[in-house]
Length: 461
Image (cartoon, rainbow, N blue to C red; front, top):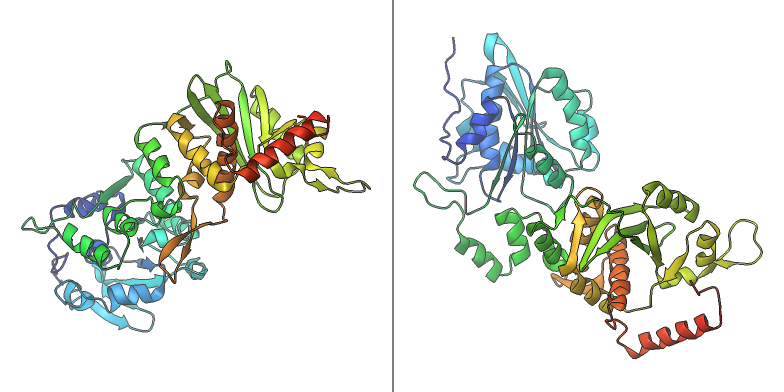
């Protein structure tokens, strides 16, 4: 009988031992560990190889891109220059090494074999995994993968009662962020670890990556402070320096102001809208309770009509005070067989939504308004979840050539919730007596708006 001691040639650091230990207890492992923290070596040599040698089967080691797997594992080296495959896989176990498909066949128990193969899954390549068996899966740099990868591999593992390791550094608050924190809520099934450079040491107590190393990269322009927070301190607030209110939203969360915040029927609800047709409509539902501004709900949808939104408002069961729309609701448009174009304001009124028009303010002044208001704000953690995520990531265009964020708003899925929040702040600040219309042009629009209202036009809402 062939006897090989596994793991082979690896002596896990003290902080790594719980990773392997909890895997051996049958838990799925979720790792949010800094760059150069040894995630792949631990998962490959400490988990995948011992598992494949003990239980005959098929094991997938998955990267976003195939060449990442070749660089990290197949042709990779450790920090001492040792070849990963040569040094950490006992030669006695290796039956065949397929360099073209990066497939390793090794001896397993009961005179059977196991296959470990490296895959790249982005750009729809995960479809190649459908139908394949899997006794165990490692997802490396999972935050850079498409979410559908999990949808493909989970049924495989259910069929074989297999295991998975999901590891990465953060990449903003995408699906990996949500999945990681969801996994943390089930400690019976999952082991989750976050380890920054302040948490990882060698056997002599020396940091694997020092603060001085990171600071040198920042000083040399290799990375920004923002990128360093993500890559070495495992922050999910990617791009915070390029967001408009990302830092303030994180402070709100850190201070416990994202919480269970139910609708209070003793206070009326105001809604603040950003309107679109092809683009999403985004709506914040807000109650003002004393000095507090409570964001109790958020809704967004694309390709909808005011009839749809009238139904949503009714189904919410809230008692409303006012609905606020942006200035462009005054634009006229034709609908169906109507010969005379009507304003969107009139179309909304036809289905029972009576809008008040948000004063026209510059983007900059609207931004100042929301920044000045956030200190008074609280958010419901469930109903506002998507809206909160949008506000955290609502940001500027990044100029790759100049390696900096511009002052131009990035129009993406996050900007609609940001616009609705700006309109909320403009209206609330105006009601509080703050003049958010500071420029001559904006005051001109305000005066024109007042004159038109005095004529009893359709804008008197």
